[in-house]
Length: 252
Image (cartoon, rainbow, N blue to C red; front, side):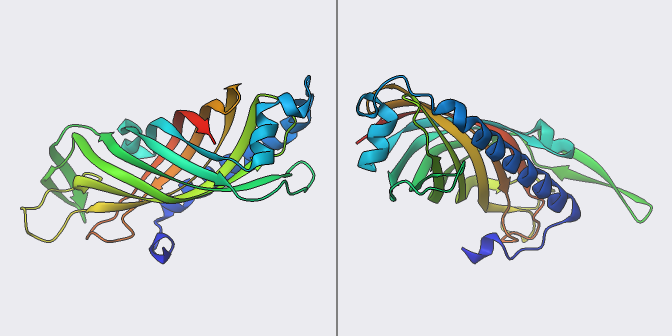
């Protein structure tokens, strides 16, 4: 777990992560300031799917898909798609802290299908100390799987009968069948390049919209930083911002 945090960030990565953190804080504060409007319940709590889930500290599970886009330089040409399932359990009773009142939930997810779509492979030209070099550079579609074993989610307290907003932070692991992200190609078996293993620290906000008791449609926006923590010889990293998550949840 410590590997998530002990690698050295480049200046560009640091600036990007700071911008991402500011974005997430803004989104969380926006959700928080909207909560008073969501507390205008029109039915009793016994009739509210949100109140039932809160009072029972329910389990949740269901399928979801992610779709996202990279940022920064040529990373804006990177696109991502993934599909899988998630599970979670509300652990605490409501904790009252003003507009930040809510409940703590612990969750996890697995994505057996994970793909990144990058510019096609080909020769790239680089300049170094006044000299120009041309190297074969990887690219194309990268396929793999991902697991996020720990998701810390805060479900905001609301008396809305259908809408449950949340904020979360998590850490995951991505495996790809080829070294990701694409970099200068090296002969197979030789040292160099990036890594087939990458870490994915992330955070986001979202809502559950209950269509009926114990059933919800879910919408989220996540910011994800993808990095090998220098497991490979090179660690250029990828920041995927505006990763949209859509899902359907069963509550028990």
